Image 1 (cartoon, rainbow, N blue to C red):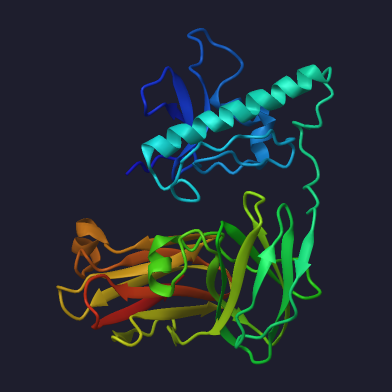
Image 2: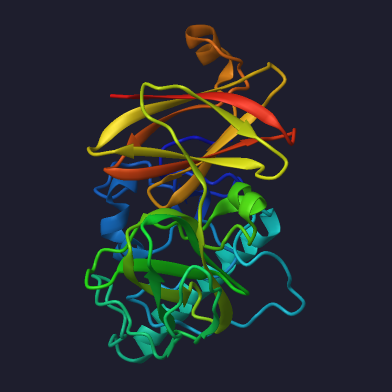
Length: 354
């Protein structure tokens, strides 16, 4: 697995160009190799040379991404094409996606030339487009599971009513790739919720990898919920807010966590009043156990299942026991513990903060 820092690297397909690596995947952005003679432009000036990348989604894709400063050009669908809603790692889809993006960029440039250089696109940035339409659901509570329509190039809005302080799994599922924001009513700062729950979490809680959803600590009150579709398509989406059973882990106090057939997973809750680093050390009660931790970093869900031989030899535990260093924000942080192969298991969990 490639673990290089984001940046420009030789194209992995062997083409005479460099391609942008965003830290996780190869993107669709390429440029020719820099000339041999020293010039003032290169990978370090890429965003200045190509300002339209500033608000682009740099993850690999099977189709074009709409950038807020572009006037989208029509793209014909490939007859008979099937596959995941977004890039799933297939080489063919990756190459098709790259070709479509190039065609879209050429079409926009041609439009600008035909109009005498008066294209609506503003490479320097601009205001986000206003949704063309909005549909609204009545307010709902955790016991409900409302379904509504996200209009094309628009948004589905509703209000989540929480009557009891607690921990909840909040998310949405859709026929297409929906995004969700949840904001305490009367405020403007949305809570941290991942755009994609990822394969590991989807396998545990349902839905698909591109559906949003994660655990949140919600005080009683009202929350504004907005659903959009990433590619501006009309879709049907269902919302969910379910009370969660969690295991509170206090830093410095190890706790034994049992996984059973009924639960399958344990949701660990770490709480801190200040921003701090922490180490989560999980050790199986027997060597044949293989645990995995799934957690949220920023807006991305990540999983880790092995500490590796070096860490095991240094601090103990099996090389297959999970071990992770986290940056905790004030409030609650949720980490999901599972056993990869057995239905029942016991793990000792300790958290060291500082």
